[in-house]
Length: 585
Image 1: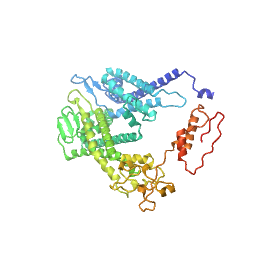
Image 2: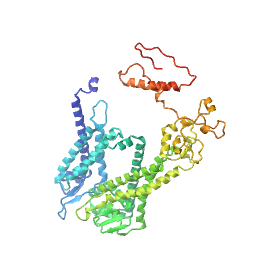
Image 3: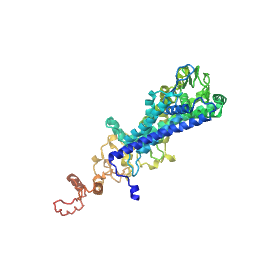
Image 4: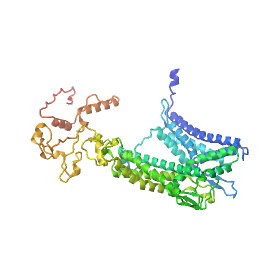
């Protein structure tokens, strides 16, 4: 009985694949239904608690469906207005976006995550099935909300609703696969494929992405701080607008929840204000650190009480410019922590060119992220003066790029120099570096050290400087134009001792003489390494490989014979096998 319950039924592969795709499809439907149901319950509770509801339960559910689609980026339209002209609602509460995105991500991750004893669909199949199930519920919600007080613009269901759902599902499938950075597709440029295949490129790209995220987070946090300070100064105006919007406690709870869901939007507005372009308070007014120009069309809402007053700016308004400056310094510090690590020798530090390149890429990523976030933080709230409301993304993005690159790049170079200063500071750990190596700070030097020079048990000692005054780098003699090691002739003393002669033919008793160490040879063709490779291939072949050992090519055998010392005894020949094959020496 236990074996019957633990063993899955024997089904054809086609039927098993179909069941796995159906399960992924139902996961997408369940994720969408859970998000829509949670918001519908909240709206229904507020409708029940309202003493004077404007519509019945059907109207409340239609409003909940419309708000749920608004959380995905859809644009809504209010058909019932005083002017009779439908008014668009394009400001997306960013806090509401977190719920649907997390549910779609979780559904795709669970659908694509391998589980013991159960067949899972392919990554592409899981992505398509979860996205299709989620979008099916979204289309039904849009059709249901068509007759409500808030209607969905059909064009926005494809963009950005479908794009948001597909992005969340793709992130979930990628997470289930372990967040790999696999090779690029075959149609991509070969140069880019080779660059992505290098570990060094991945390290630099990871550092740039991390620094861009840190810069954007500090920028948004600074914007939230600006909004909090402004609300603290005008707390009376914010309280007055809050009490004027609703007289009963259920209405005030609804206004409070809406204000909380718009807090990320307000933080992005503050970030755009600190960057310089500011934000629009209608089609005829713009708020910048230099002042508020035009006539604003500000509706009564608590968060809008933080908007600056009309007239020229004061030094307190100019202090908002410190927000992007601090964000740029944070971006530079994040890059320098990888460019000059505290627990690594100075030889492994990035070159100034690499530091500038990674900082510039991080600034570019921060600018692109700021433009994307400010684009969704604002939008129209009407067809007249409120047709433009919020920050302008094509101004905020380049402004963020300019701040991050203008301050971040010089700051990164200065911080790199500060962290690579003279010895005596504990966190530099210069003693861990190979003795005698020259500290150039270049990327090529670091790669040489990481490539095996610093990790070997060879005491690297530089040679004496040339007549030109430039020290010779013992790991790269070609950089100074000196002859390679193979051209150095052996002295009689060195030949007798079995080692090379000192450079320039200097005797060993010379007080300025220092021994020269050769780099270790490649152990790929050694006997023990070949036997280990052969045993590993034999174990993994499943019995397909022969039992006789690997043959040594004639060229390699001759090389091994020539490398043996003169006084070494030749290996004893072993008798041949029955088939005429001799054992490998």
